[in-house]
Length: 235
View 1 (tube, rainbow, N blue to C red):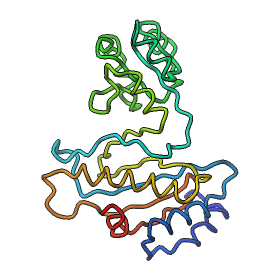
View 2 (view 1 turned 120 degrees about the vertical axis):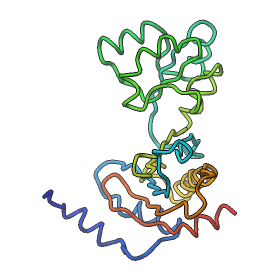
View 3 (view 1 turned 60 degrees about the vertical axis):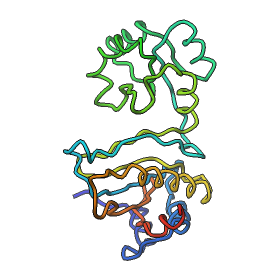
């Protein structure tokens, strides 16, 4: 059994396990309990009453957080010609076609966070499915990463666009910022994501949709959030 550090034990004692905190309270507390020596990522976990085995209950989408994630995102774009110039002007870190594909295949090079492709490049990108797919990097029209407007896609990725998909147990896990963000920025990011999740409720779900929501930092304990408080904030 893994041992629990004194730091984590102390942080855990600062959370009332029987309480569901308001969004403001949880954002304040998650920052207070982020005591690691690095800038911890704050993550929002949402447990949904869905069964992703059924296609009509698959919850997936994208969301642009108003304050970004606090991460420096490296963007790779598969495109050529004028679109390549457009991607570079928008801030893409890597732009190319066959040369990038060869590097990924031969060197197992994966020093990037987001992959965007113009539609004509999918003949090249499709061959990389076994490498990019398992890592969640495969471009997809549903997430806006296969598009003619590569410049806009790059800007959104750099600005803090997140892509999410419910896992096999019905949970969503997304970063909503860093512990150094102030409470207001964390709360606005969390509320933006929550509102998107509500919008994506499958029509086949007639009863309870949300089970639990929690916030946690990289090295900190989970803090349960009151879903009624969140719902009230988006009305």
